[in-house]
Amino acid sequence: MIFRRYGTAYQSVDLNFDSLALNEIAFRRNREEAIPAEDFDASFPVLASHELVADAEGDVQDATEDVMLQHLEAQVEEIRGALGDGEILVVENEQGHGWPKTKQKTSNLVVDGENKLHFHYSVAPPLRITVRRRP
Image (cartoon, rainbow, N blue to C red; front, top):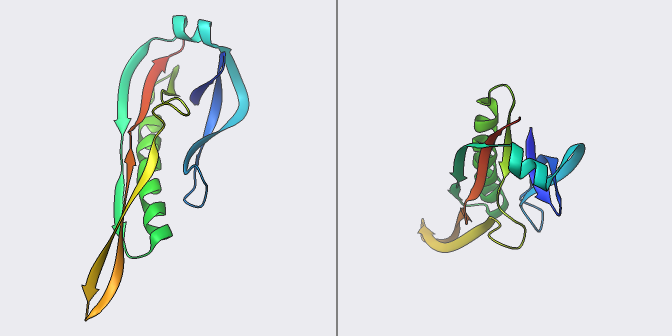
C-alpha cells in the first residue's frame, strides 16, 4: 500500500502517472485508509529511502514522455513488490515544495537531409519514497 500526506493525515493513494495530464506525476486518494499524521510519524519507523528518477528519448513527444513515466512507475512497483509483511510505501515529496516534475529538452536532428525533432524527458527533483513498518 502507498500513503501520502494530505494536511493532518496520511491517506492511501494509487499511482496516477499520465503524460496527458497537467501534473504528470500524481497520486489519487483511494480512501481505503487514513491515519492521523501525529500517530503515523510517531509509530511508523522508516526502514529505507529511495530517490527515483527516470528518463527517455524519442521522436514523438507524448510517446517519449509516456515511456519515461512507465519507467518511473516500474521502479515504484518494484519497490512495492519487495515489501515485507506490515511494510508500506510513503511518498515523501510535498505538493508545491519539491514535487517531482517532468522536464523536456528538445533538439533538432538532421536525418536524411531533413530536420527532425528529438525529445528527451526526465524527472526532477527525484520522487522520494520511503519504506515504513506498521506498528
